Image (tube, rainbow, N blue to C red; front, side, top):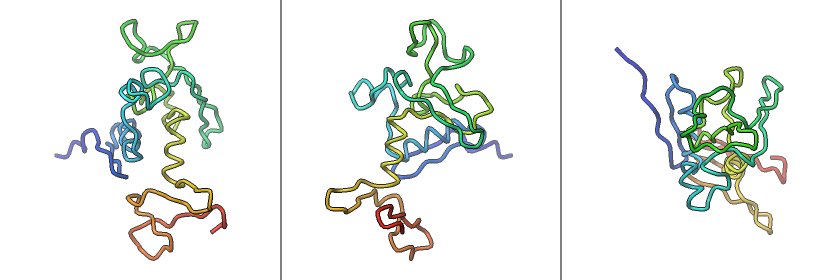
Length: 164
């Protein structure tokens, strides 16, 4: 019998995760957008928040529930004395970014995992591309984007400057 696809795999513009563990999907999608694991990136100086956490990041918003999502881990999941999870001055643990295993730290009522503002900007930049001073827009071609919409296997890219 089929027991599920296992964990997940992501990179090169693609991400796949198990339907049995939604957190793996968000984590692997992050790899698809070019994000490394949070703590390692922090140690290398390419992620701004301590040990891949959300201490210093802004809150998120769940548009379906019309609720803000805070940066604190609720309950005791992963927030042990031995854990290297950043805490505030009152001892409250901050959530970890999904790229550092932060899935499962949000209340079950939320539909989305809270990526740090830094990683959310990476996703936005990956999807929208980077504008040059001369008006040209560059984007990751591995994302299967087709500027004229001619390919049935590709997405058409929105052009915000022209509204197209």
